[in-house]
Length: 161
Image (tube, rainbow, N blue to C red):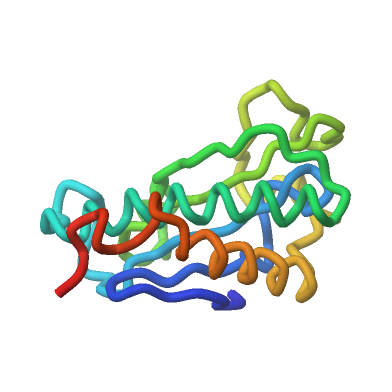
């Protein structure tokens, strides 16, 4: 995973094996730093607020950034998954939210259909392209700009300590 942004409790990373190819809208994962937390029901109120702010911030920055890159992202989908952790040798589940860009011209994950998530061994994801370094830099610049807007100021969310 390529980490390109962090908050107090969360890490934002592009997925090297995306469920949505870059040209179909892209895939970013937001994961909790404390991987003993399996899902949102175990979050403290300040962590839940931080996660909501972060999903909104990342989704907006992703849509703006990828559109700047010529990928016509018209919608962002957010999914808290983790079911594959229960497969044999799957590890322990931990809180993470997948952020999927949905491009109007998507081919493998056509919009407005729901994202398909077959098992990794199916071959469905073969050839899916992760976000590029340039995509990440542009999205990060959008994140930094958005965090200066009143809507995303941590004080507005009660997150200033």
